Image 1 (spheres, rainbow, N blue to C red):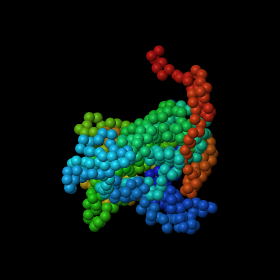
Image 2 (image 1 turned 90 degrees about the vertical axis):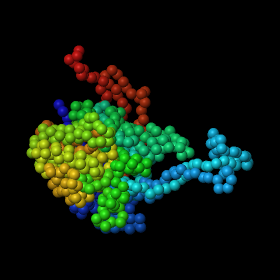
Image 3 (image 1 turned 45 degrees about the horizontal axis):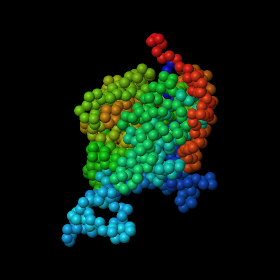
Image 4 (image 1 turned 180 degrees about the vertical axis):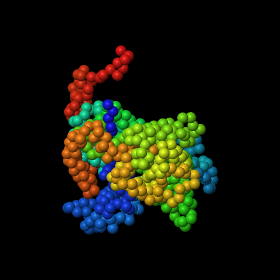
Length: 637
């Protein structure tokens, strides 16, 4: 028997705001939402950004004035719109107009052949240069006569050539949400994002643990580049070069799989499977693929899947810039020369499938909770959709590691073929859409559009709707497909495929004879799309395409497998689950919730276990770890 991986919870944080309950998705289509729904997201963002707080049964602003939802939208709406999504990076991260650098400087003597300076003895180098002469001034200081030139690195600043980024909503400080203890920012986002996803379920995690054996739970999460700020890799790589000490935490906390480790150790106390499968910009789908296979085959019944990345650091931005990958301010402004602009329009920096000049980096954490179909029904879980399959292919031999290849053609075609086997060709042709990778680079607009267009042509799709949400959010690297999947779930809730709003004109070299690329939001209806394809193309030849099934189609599949009685029982249980989930959403909009972060509680050692040759009993877990295995190779014995 094959089990269906059902999406029962999702959440996170990115430049559009909170992921759960479709708030981040709503921000991208907020201009077409019903006023009441839009107001909820304005409220959520206003609280997130510290513009309002909830006290004594009402929202108040910094002046202690009462704010109704309409007042919040009217008073703070323009500010919220300008300080979310892609924009000029603010000092919440670093000052892009004054990026700190060290500049090599040479001091030459003006009079005579030496320079004389006073230095504290404790500041002297271990090895005194040969052209230095020292003379004691007192117990603590010496005079240093330097014959010739003095070379050193002096502090300076420069204006960044790339100033656009998909940073978190202005004013939101992830470090202040829980005892972060100098955690790298990427791990802070992981705690916030995974906690949001888990709480969105409306089911206490303890109840989940009681339903399944410990080894049937898995966490599949990581980051593509690791933790790169001063509390992570940047800290221990640069400390000795800038006169600082390396801390004991910087190296271990920088590891890519640390996202999984934090979720296991501080959020859910997982003792089951854990792992991070890394595939550059396809990392989320790589992790999702592992989880899906394990659930389909019965190895796992519960999976927490996702990624967290915080690459908005001046060193990282510069690294991508010198590769020619990022949209520089001057290049963006040049694209808009016909519009008569004199300043860069940072909000429109990313232009998938149009005339463009590069992508924009972003930070994000996106997580999804999957149950197998039996557990989902048994616990009355919410059904946001399900995962049919995820296909991964490499590019084969390459001229260069960064050059595009044909692997994405394989993943696209296999995903379409898989969907056809599930739902028939009519659904593939007329009831599906694709969330493209859509980075906004000149190379991607050609290669990805050709792959998508050829796949559509091969399967007889005439006008395949294409979304490219990086025009709103930017490129978050590892979590990029998580941003796309989150948006796809929103389409099934509200019936809109977000338009590629920066697509003023489709570029001449884009292949789109069988595609539908719209600058406006496409209203497709809540029930008219059965399948969403999530497409990613990663650096080095990492390609993946996922087949995501709509909530309605998922329920139809569950009904055929388990029968009407099971669905009726699920519906009854689901009412309490939805009520609890909605209570979390309401409380979070009011700013009354904090991320789950459990430190120093429930810590166990080997002596706490009860072990026999049949099972292992772990304190706090209702079910035992099974040690009775079936022989997987019966034909060999």
